[in-house]
Image (cartoon, rainbow, N blue to C red; front, top):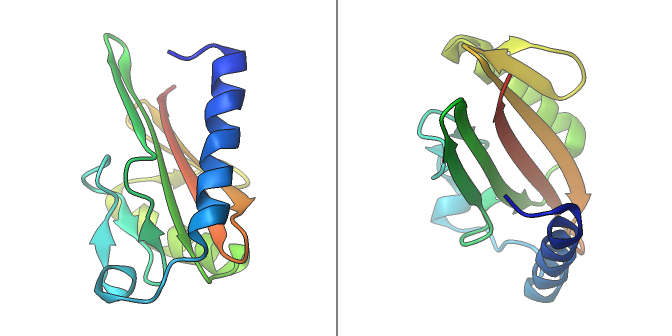
Length: 127
């Protein structure tokens, strides 16, 4: 797992790459109701496009650790409303703020400015 300094560097590099790439252009993937590639049952909100190659997956004896990113011209409030409605249907329970829990895992959503687009970081960790 990356150290604190490496994680800071990786995060800064990701934000720089997203800013250079600009906001996600609307297209079939951004409009389609799909799933986040690294988490097979985590829906991708319409209007968001997954940032390919930005995710990280670690399998550990006590559970998986997943970090994935999606971006789009959506608001934080719309993203929260979508996931607060969609996730309980998949067995997730609200855990306060932008966090959800299910079967020994916690899913957190964080919001970042991606140069005109909202970047959503999905972090899945064992409880």
